Length: 374
Image (tube, rainbow, N blue to C red; front, side, top):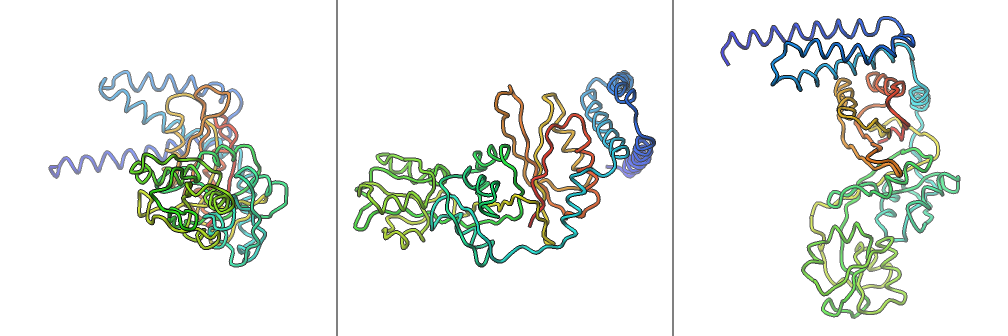
């Protein structure tokens, strides 16, 4: 670019920044009454019609995006000024100021059986855990929700197989808070009964995610049938009991020693870099001093720009979104519930202001604070 062009660009950017600041100042002046809220959509449509009337047709969409973003930020600022601190933010501040450390020992609910990756996650989070095993993910949620166990461990995503959809779907149906997370290195091996040979195997059982993570190995053995199981360690335990010698399982190497099985094949996962992230849940909100990540869940109206408007608010607050998960809402056509994860200290004033804004936004349904955790 020529120097004069750069100078002109800088001058325009400075003017935009000055005008935007004044626009936001005006938005925060005075609490809107009911009539203001009723009239706002019509005023915004009229503004869009006016500012786009003389615009280059090629810039029509970009102009609409820009002004809809400005409208969204201004409305959020206006609502925040009127509503003040939300109950969610008050709870976060009250809990964070307690400075309660994460416990070294606890009773922990885990899916599966001894030797599972969930058990390894529990042992990483708690130096001295007392682990109770449950048949499935929902049973872990229920154990925590009913007070049987103070904490529960659940897988939430894998670097190779993606999000654990069942856990995200169950989040909507249960009351809990995320209080910790940890990444566990996944090292799948093929286990068989003592003396079994790979050439004799006709079935391989494991959790669907483990089967998906070993897709290339299964493809190279087309004569072997994949059988989904509830858990890798449960599959290994059942194989050791009374399964036929023609069956093998995909599980951790630790299961070989625990259940008296032979390793028939090693390094069978598609990706060498294979990690599963586990969350620790609790019935009550707990925020430790080292918390550096937030998770929230919400629903948005089914209209163009609804999601981009929320993302723009995160960007305006200087927040780094690390995960955005969408799940369909049962019984609703093309309606989705979104889970946002983002990096932040629980006492970041910009993030607390953002949560207050989202709490007061009439277009956001069912905003749920899932947790602030390390």
